[in-house]
Amino acid sequence: MGKNLLIIVLAVIFLGCSHTAGRQYDVAAMDRIGVGKTTESDVLTMLGLPLSEKELSNGIKIYDYAYGNRCILGFGTSLDLMQVQLYNGVVINKWQALMHD
Image 1 (spheres, rainbow, N blue to C red):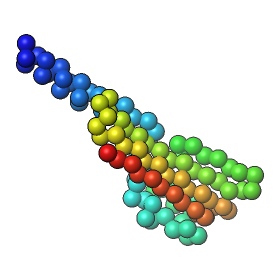
Image 2 (image 1 turned 60 degrees about the horizontal axis):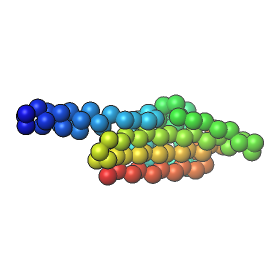
Image 3 (image 1 turned 90 degrees about the vertical axis):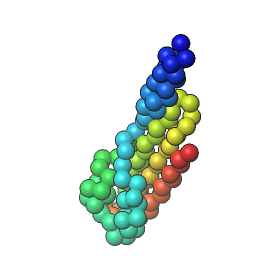
């Protein structure tokens, strides 16, 4: 009986870590993105298509990237967020938050 219980507990732990949202992206790309230098094409090559894209009335385009992974038991939870703002096809601002426990 004890061996079966151990197998069930281990299965729950390993299977419980498969709750993900968003799409993984290269979090190290932030260091390669230069404000005033990197183009929209460069961003798309480095990161792929964003999770969401907005274009403001002033012409600024905002790309949002996000990926999260959460275990049922709360161990190994992570959230990676990145936002890139572009104007006239060039990066004007960038922001990133990486939260891992």
